[in-house]
Image (cartoon, rainbow, N blue to C red):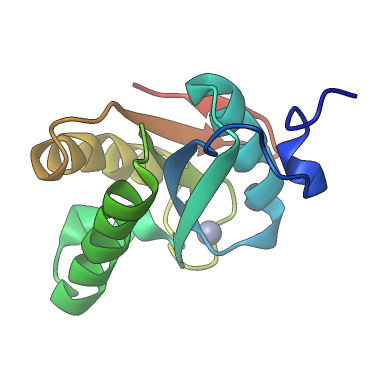
Amino acid sequence: MVKGSDALGGGVPARAPTFCTAINCLDGRVQLPVISHLRQRFGVDFVDMVTEPGPVGLLAARTNVAAVQSIRERVKLTLERHQSCGIGVVAHHDCAGNPVTAAIQQQQLRACVPLLREWFPALPVIALWVDEHGVVQEMG
Ligand SMILES: [Zn+2]
């Protein structure tokens, strides 16, 4: 095994580790699918995880200012300290934190993308939907 090739195994990479960022639900079912998708999508070793219950509901409504600000600050930290190279924002089937229909969640998900691009113009932002089978789909 090439040293550093298996970052998830806890080995010390031969080069500086690379990161991207997920704004994800706290739901345990979606963690591994999102990590796996984003590692491959952005070609990084690690995915920094900013979790909230149903973050797209919070970001689309923007009424809970403290929660929105907290998400923004945590994403900013991953950029500043880990040189995160991309952001994935996530919604998923059967979200306890955002109990609205899939169609509304997907609408909220799409609405988050311009906001995140405005906040973090240097980074690519992608929207991810995790379906009832744990399959990750990019929605723009
Ligand atoms: Zn959820």
